[in-house]
Length: 153
Length: 265
Image (cartoon, rainbow over the protein chains, first blue to last red):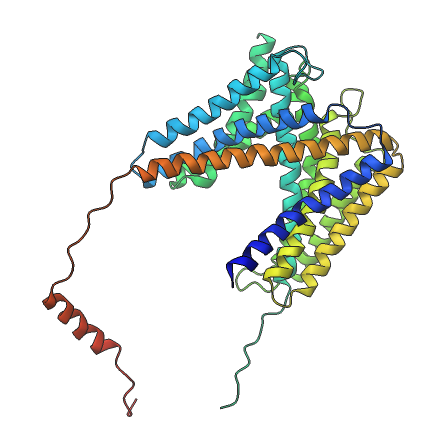
């Protein structure tokens, strides 16, 4: 297959990924135009928390990588710095007054709220993935095995 | 015990135990460590689930209550899908027709249970108001299921060969979840009205997009860190080219095993 058609397929996949959330959120805004307060704050908090948490999770996977590569220290330190950078960014932005603060009294309370909210979103995504992929897998398993038909010699 | 210390031990340390246990359970090569990881994960989960009783003074306990509320339908959904999938054409350990029917029943009950949490009196309430994590969870689940089923249908259509049944199934799932979203946006439930659902659905969109962007940045940096490290490694020792004698020896072996089929075979 040509490289151009592969790129086309990837860009269509990316568009498809954005299409449905875009349509559903557009419909939501169309039906309830008075919503939307705090969207940017929520997005920024989610992004910073996701970056920090996933950096630390990837840091843990480096232990597995270390088994295969004689336990190198450099990538471990690099990823630790990424995670710490995320923590520092979160604390910095949260301490800038109302920039990222929601209905919490302190930076620590807001950071802890962000982590619990991130966990809730991850759980919802995991159950959605289980539902979609589980149904697909179940359907595939119920398809009768394909028969090979040989041409008569 | 100090309330902060109690919350740290029974909630945050338990949460850390769940994550570390999960990683050890899935990635460790030694079975003893894998078992230890699973035990750690179960203990951590139980500790978080018990927080409405052990940490009733802390706002974090609402998360434990939320987890307890969705545990039933989630387990039913998982076990139901497992039963349906493994009663199909699997070569080993195929489940019975009864298991398959039970699986369908479990999935149906799980879906009705989740629906009852939005459209009936089953909405998780803690301590005397709707659990705020349920208000985040339900719109996120609908949004990700609708988007995910549509994207996976596109992938199946592009990659699969004659997978019409799978495409129809995924399209049905997409239509069903999109319908639930539209109903939620237009009609009030007994506990959650349409405006509140719309607000939460909009913010769920912000959460999901934020999660995707943050995760993409983290993964890109991870790849960058590993690429830099690997590029700095010395090249492995190069072997000398084979000698004429070694080449002749190899040619002899190849000729012995890759020759044409003789007539008497």
